[in-house]
Amino acid sequence: MGAVRVAFLASVSIFAAAPALAQAPQVEKNVSMGLSLAIIQGAIEQCTKDGYKVSVTILDKSGNVAAQLRGDGTGPHTMEFSRLKAYTARTRNQTSLQTMKLLEDPANAFIRQIPGVVGVGGGVPIRAGNEVIGGVGVSGAPGGEKDEVCANAGLAKVEAALK
Image (cartoon, rainbow, N blue to C red; front, side, top):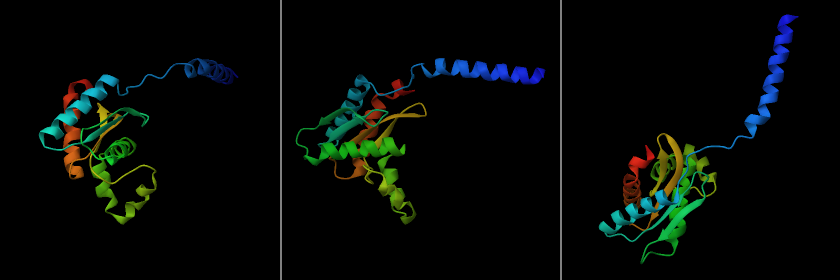
């Protein structure tokens, strides 16, 4: 009988504490405005140095646009394409170039069913340590590999803050 009473009291205490735990706010890492602007600046600087006119999008942890900049002289498609690349990186937790390579295998065709995912380089996840907290997408250079170089240059600018 004593064991049953102890088990009952333990169960009651767990159920009594559960509502208090459920009311605690979440604490999570996410992309800030300052971080977004620094990444954009680094990406634009690299692409400008390389002679490319690009647009850059930063998405937060939830996949929402945190910041976006259309570069001077870029095509009108570059804004949306940079967002899709960032979304792919955030959603898949890998670069959009890696997604492109996965899609070369017909067995991975199901990935194309995910709305908004593209198989073109230029999107890179933003990681704080090992946690993905957003995505950066660059569009406008002649080829996704070149866009990705610029995205990585933007992330290199904030590398210390993301440790």
